[in-house]
Image (cartoon, rainbow, N blue to C red):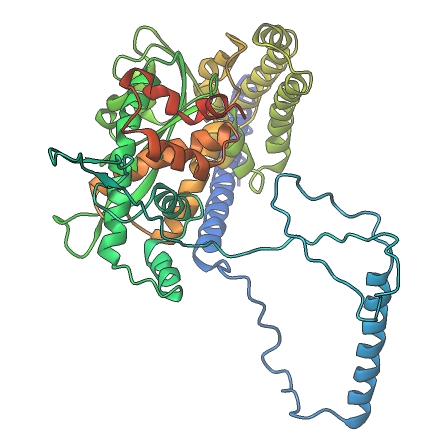
Amino acid sequence: MQNPLENLTKEQLLARLEKETKRREKAEKIVSIKDQKISDLEFQLAQYKRIVHGQKRERFEGNKDQISLPFEMEPETAQKQEEQVKEKLKFERRKRASAHKGRMALPAHLEVREIEIYPEEDYSDMVCIGKEETDELEYEPAKLYIKRYIRYKYAPKNKEGVIIGELPARVIEKGIPGAGLLAWILICKYVDHLPLYRQLQRFKRENIPIAASTLEGWVRQSLELLDILYQHLLEDIRSKGYLQADETPIKVMDKNKKGTTHQGYYWVYHCPIDKTVLFDYQPGRSAQAAEHVLSGFKGYLQSDAYSVYDKIGAREGITHLNCWAHARREFTKSLDNDKQRAEIALTYIQKLYKVEARAREENMDPQQRKRLRLDESLKILEEFGKWMVDELQQHNILPKSPIGKAIHYTMSRWDKLHAYLYDGILEIDTNLTENALRPLTIGRKNYLFAGSHKAAQRSACIYSFMAICKKHDVNPEEWLKHTLENIMTINHKNLRDLYPQNYKKLKNI
């Protein structure tokens, strides 16, 4: 049989060879893309399996087929165990009798209750030559007591009119709880995350009968009082020139939704300059919800990649920054999919954070920090950007693969990730805002949902002030008691003196 290639010219053979080579390259490329797609799908499947079937408890079950223990020990075993316990007791007693040179010094501000111990022997004919002091840190449960105001009345001899001592302003008019008790209840609920029904159990143990509705009323009325201060905080936060923003969900009971809860959101705004924090509850996560605080805002706005912030950040007078912690998170997710590229990207980001660490360690002012970033961080960013462009151009990285998503996320927000170089007051990420959210997420696991939309907003009020207390190292219970005692009597012009950030100065602490 005649070979069909024999009658072809050299040029025709070369053309056919080139065509066949291109066909094979195309086929190999398709196979490569399919292999990568399979790899990505396997990665996603592994992630889903980890979410669905991953171990959700820490209890160790051991071997289910192990032999059960006997009810009684062998005599030899029991004797051996007794000897070991005896030796251990001797060792502990010797250790306690020895001098403890590394003991921590106890705080000087604590109350000291002295207990004098004299020898049991007869020492009436002896002379005291000294004494030894041993300190022990002890705890006494919180004490509930009755504060009784006794106001004396006086009447003139002509029996015209009566005078009486004036009763101090009270947090709840005609109510029985004092400011200290209300502060303690609020701290237990919103700082120590102890739901009200558990607090009721504590009152019962003290044989103090308080109805659940009464306790809820105390909390509601206290927070309504704090709302006066909160409204001033809301106005002040809008005037800040630099805000970090984030949001987190909260389940809310809604009378219009029977058998289910409404998904509301706490929006949190943080000003790193003066460490002011504001929580704002909104029923939704739309742009309209963010407008409640950000309407008319001018200055630097830093956030994650949520589209609502993009729309607000595009307005005139606003410089929108993104967060490097979120970009780093995307590359961390891709470690299992493309370890080599993910590690290179994470190394670049790590270098950026080392520059920030140096600025903190050397306590640099904003001008010095900006200069350091322009000298060092800018070079790292240029190298990182060039590496990502080269990877996209020279290698076949699927956009929907984990590493592809990470690179595209970072490249699409490159200008906003660069923006922290503009000013030394700006932060590289929004981690400070996420830190403010953590107490809320812990509390949410305990009380599960808010009783109503109004209750959720009242919680936003107290969470705001508790977050500010934490950032300014203020004892929240002391601040809350002081504020509840004074908020109704202070001059309205001096109301901002009650902010937690002013508490230490007010008390000369």
